[in-house]
Image 1 (cartoon, each protein chain N blue to C red):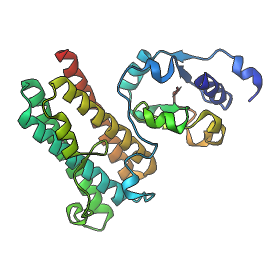
Image 2 (cartoon, rainbow over the protein chains, first blue to last red):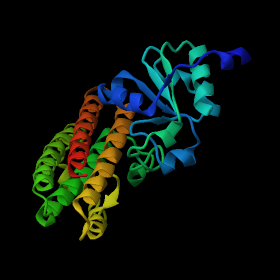
Image 3 (cartoon, one colour):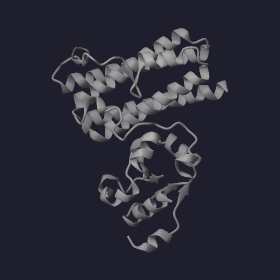
Image 4 (cartoon, each protein chain N blue to C red):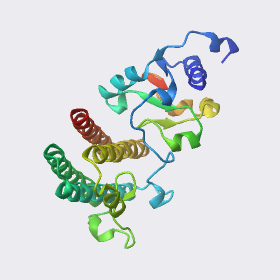
Length: 73
Length: 196
């Protein structure tokens, strides 16, 4: 990934949009990724979220299905 | 900001539809699941055999059933009573499902015969039933519904974690259970909405 990728527009969802999105779908149909640190995850996370701290994300890309819509927080 | 960076990494890696949740967890304002990534699995250490997961699920469902049954006896609110009775029934059917899963993967054994002797009654969310009942004593219906939602949220989260570790039919069963817990959540949330 190049440094310029950070400046590409990023698609966002509000928390309310995420709530609706999750409600209407089977958990198999999307990826929900918590990119914070394990301690933050322990204190509270969205139900069903997979923990992959952002610093480790590049090592775990193969564990996430690229064709499914993906929400990160 | 971290999630923006994550989204950039994922988009760079060929992910097609990637979204960043604005405001992160602080914007969520809903119930969150607690515990480490493998929460609830501590009971079995690192073992991830299907019968062990089925047994853990059975114990959690059994504890939740007990909680709903006993709460139903002490609740004054008719709507909540009705919902708790129906949730207790749902937990019984979940127990049957995971008992069957256990039977298949353990060569015909009954899960009740194999339970650890020191288990105590734990329920969804890994909380002890007696502690939960003590906590709930004298609390208003809203607080109790709120608590039930946190249980179901944790159960939903746990089943999805189990589902990811398994293959084949066992995987399908845990996904189904997760989806049912999600429906329980919606019913509990709907009732809170009505009560406030």
